[in-house]
Image 1: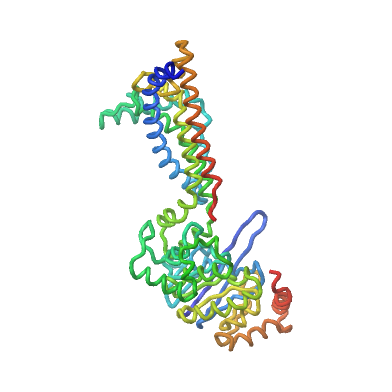
Image 2: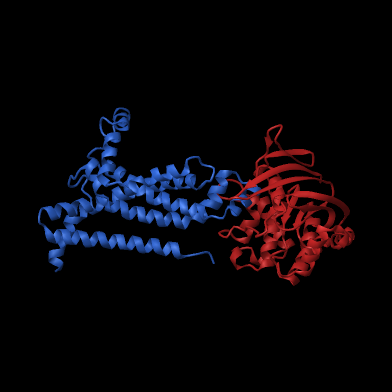
Length: 229
Length: 261
């Protein structure tokens, strides 16, 4: 058995490495933007709050192919942002791992945003007010009160986002394609293995992906259940 | 301390609305806002501390304008120099006792304390006998200890005035009596004038001073007594006196039901 596993593992190494690179980059992006958006959405004074919330949730419910098409339109070589990135910084997102990371980031973003909004809304406003009467400006209130108290919810949402980014398929395929060694992540490799009738490889990749995701979900659940003593 | 308030604020809820029209002036070291629940006392304190913005009017503290709707002045809560002890204490559950007390002294986003800050925290903890619990989280403290921490946290920045929102309501009756005396003593020692909210005549007896009687969103009457227990006894008599009509009733009920609230 170990003899037959080794080549499977070897073949999985490159997509696995790429998956981690893409999903970690995507999660970092989704975490920063998601926390910022979640905090803004948790403030009562924000005009058009529910509409913005709906827009932020869109990547969660839209078909990934639709998301991918939007990304192509915006970030493609002739897209508004894509053209600017190409001319200004010589960055191409189409058919690159950065493009795959962008796609994964966009679909993972709502998970952080939703979790962060709920977590920030769960922070007692009395505590934020107490900090204000103690001379704290809004930045300090955020850094020392809101963020530490919402931390668990945010980390849990980020774990979900990481799991989602690792499994991202549709939007990635649209913008980054399925190039082995360059943009072929685990989920794309599974697809190709099945298409090619390489069942052993597919089974191995599926189990590997499942194990990583289960571990992430367990960690996320554990973080949520702990409370201050 | 001189506090001059003339504000109006309307709160709208689902199908209900509440209008506060408070006008009061106080010059002593102790001011008590007395009245039944829902009469606008807390709203007044929140306006003084800058946590809510009145619809109109002005607030002056020691001659400084904190809020004036005509002149478009509205100093943010963080710059008002007003200490606030919340009814539920609002201690930061993720910070230790020392970090809570030092919160207002720390600078920057990460809450570092300078040498003077550390000394001040140590001094305050010693003042209320909490040195041993300096590194405990608020969740481990008893009600009286939490109140001391909240008081010290508010006093740390040497506020121009200390606002106390029903500070003794959440304590059991025996502890309440002790804390009343202790809190007043600490405020006196710290040289901080107080504005106290209560519906308990015994609190009035301990603090005395200017007593403002609240009823359904307005200050109905202001009586000035001597600060502290000397004037407090007369203030209590006044509140419990039947000839005060609605107040007498409120105060009388509060007196009988003490311990149930």
